[in-house]
Length: 484
Image (cartoon, rainbow, N blue to C red; front, side, top):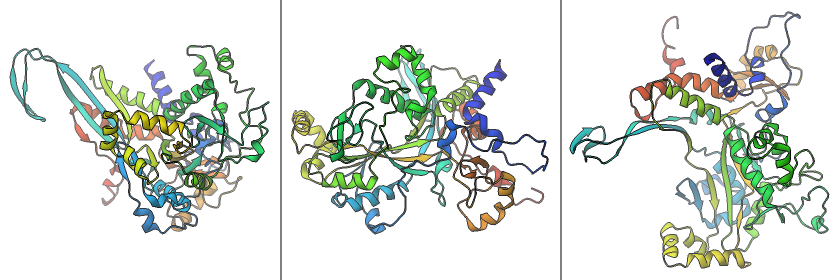
């Protein structure tokens, strides 16, 4: 039973499990009787091999000098990067700055902690790693058993390779804030069976019909579901059968729930014709031309590629395997920056985005008036949440100069020469068949990462460690030894 559980967990961590046997490099046997590996990944795994169709170029031709982009002033409010810099009201500067910020990758850590409570039987003074403190009889006290972090930056930060960084814009059939406080579709989108007479007169950056509450509810369920399973924002909800099956096992039955909610993924493609989404440049032009006083341009940051739900379960299992028993164990993946917010430089906007002024407005009961004015007045303005920055923890770019019929063996034969010409290639390169031929793994599989860190996590629990767990360097540790 334990072996079955481990196999199931390993399958969940090494996603896609049905394709792993094709990615392991091996010598060419030259035998026609050997079973052939699949030439393409399963359909559900294509997102790991293909960039979003409408991805923005990270570099391209910039009209703004880099020293100006680096000089843009901003502040950190929690995990929000907030700026009211007047230079970002120029659409070209805003466009270049978002692409520039995408290259400044935020840190992400695994945070593990365990605590328990003790009730002292007498008043006493104790000395421990936290210093000298007093304990009072009968007063419950929280004791930290372990509290450590593991830096995940090396998994997705590649100085010479940005193939896992994608800037995507929202689909026209997805409800989101398009400069208003309501979640709307794009004006260029019309639901199947409905045609807006004025739609041809409007563009992809114009707000269209307000989404119905039932569909918004489904979308809100979808976001955390795909996030914890390592799927990117451009993965279509309608094509993800597992999501609808698991949703149906909840409070409703699947088929009845979908139709009661007003949406059936098999009957409604959500797009009547082509996806006429706007580009990031178009959205920047729309935002900067908006005269509203309290408008904002909001860019969420996502990390995808790992099945975080399965990995969290595996880490919790490793902690329990040490014999540690507490109901207060936390395993969290923490991103230091989760969103970029751009606000206009006017006095009112700067005031409501300054912490002490914001608190003062609430204390004087003036902020509710500002809130009402923002939503009722034509110059109030709303958020533009129409793009996202995405970092892949596990992504398979195509190997340079590959072609659909190339074999992994042939690609391995030319790897030596490619390393000299393409410094962005990881060493050693893990190869896999993909849509364009032979692809290589950029990043790490969550199962491989867990295999490396599993024992260190256990040791951190046993040693009651606090701080950052150090790792890595094992492969190079004996590089200078004769015979290594």
